[in-house]
Length: 389
Image (cartoon, rainbow, N blue to C red; front, top):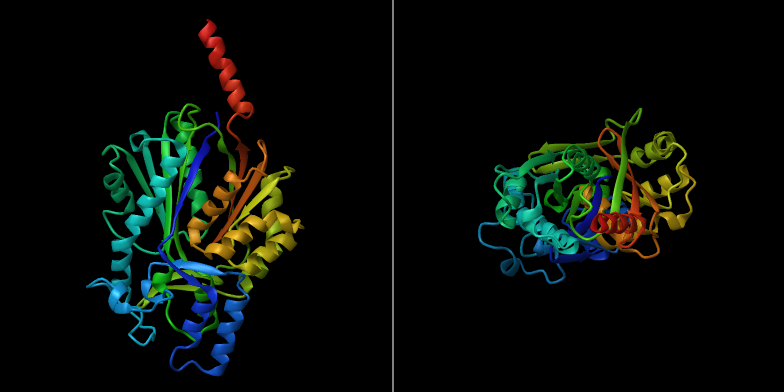
């Protein structure tokens, strides 16, 4: 029996920032010259994003730092709305303070959707590239969800936007080795912790797309765990492109983590995506696609490079529009929409793609199994035969 994603839960911070407001915040900073303003407007307006969520409440619609900032929390803007630049330590302290809530909320949503008690979880896999602390988020999930202290825990850190795929792959490997395993995979990224005003075009592009959010998946090979159906995890693949090592880079600076996202990234993906995907699919024709929306231009290049019908990327574009780029969590948001979409039929093949530093292409092939589908009927027949025997 293949491992399957039984359910996916998502969570976002309460502060939602419309893209036009985010644009005006950056364009209105003191000292921003006309050229930088034009770059900001061009990047934000071309993003195909309508809104994003952030843990930084001071950037919400009602700017009132005295009300939204708890004592001791670093400030990212002054009373006049001018952006501040906290050093990396305070930024990471805020990650430590607020990320566990998103981990727990996403996990609880996945457990509820799967009709599972937390006591069923045997393994925890956490994923993040936007903060560090120890004991880490894997430990906190055991405490916050009341899991058995003997639950096995793994953390995948600093892999970038592609990291959900290795997280699911690890869960599938665990399920293959231990058929009774029930693996909780949780990705949480607080990308906006690392924003700062800058005239650098690459920093402007990063500021125009990144957002905060968390997503969790329950993975098991046990057909009797949780509700029936889900997304069967068939196979995975990793490809390093021949170039791009310096075009998508995530490093730790003195004023936050620094993302280099050059204009070459979409072009590299457009040139190399066909070779990476054709070898992986080996002739299979997906019925649906879950492509990480690193940005609108990335989706455009994937669409043209693979000669996809534009409808194939509507779900990816919809998540980008509604949430922005939440790094590793984003592709799970897309898979959740496909899982819940009745237009994606039982037996539909779903191809997942995500892109990370390197430039790395992570791929997965999944099959949707609706409750009551062929596998459920087969299990019912086996159960009936066992009863008669």
